[in-house]
Amino acid sequence: AQKVTQAQTEISVVEKEDVTLDCVYETRDTTYYLFWYKQPPSGELVFLIRRNSFDEQNEISGRYSWNFQKSTSSFNFTITASQVVDSAVYFCALSEEAGANNLFFGTGTRLTVIP
Amino acid sequence: KAGVTQTPRYLIKTRGQQVTLSCSPISGHRSVSWYQQTPGQGLQFLFEYFSETQRNKGNFPGRFSGRQFSNSRSEMNVSTLELGDSALYLCASSSQDRGLDGYTFGSGTRLTVV
Image (cartoon, rainbow over all chains, first blue to last red):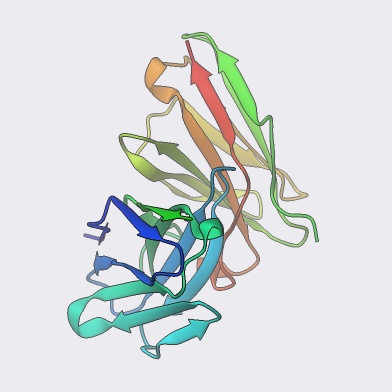
């Protein structure tokens, strides 16, 4: 069975601090896809990144970076030098190759960046 | 390019009524998925349509149904509304299978059942 765990319910940081959001997943599939989405107060989910299970390269995009480790089934997300605009709920999600074409979401982490 | 458009943004209905929500995907996207978001259950998959065919369905009662039209626009219908159906309903579209280009979500329809 598939499962995505985001153990951090809420995190508060002061502006310019770095913050890491944790994501641990469970799947029996050998081919799967991992996603991160940001949900600002407006409600829509904003796509941040997709990673497939065969690509363990870490990725950096501006102030965002992602660390994918299959050995620990983790796909963590780090924001460097956080800004107030980063305040949102962040969701990690899993899609399995052999399963239905849908996303299994974690419960989300609410990040508040204090100016 | 225009994003995923969901209408209406807000809706208030009475228990027992039925409701229809609409989703217009990004032009060229053939896959449309629906999700329900509640504080208690989080984000849960409802169903997915591709080329007018329902390919997958989540674990929801038969009161929840949907369809997709030839122009890829999709509607979801909830009949005999219950208080627990109050939620944010999100629609997502993708041009490729498995969301390889990343599913694009709309802003959602917030349904309140009273």
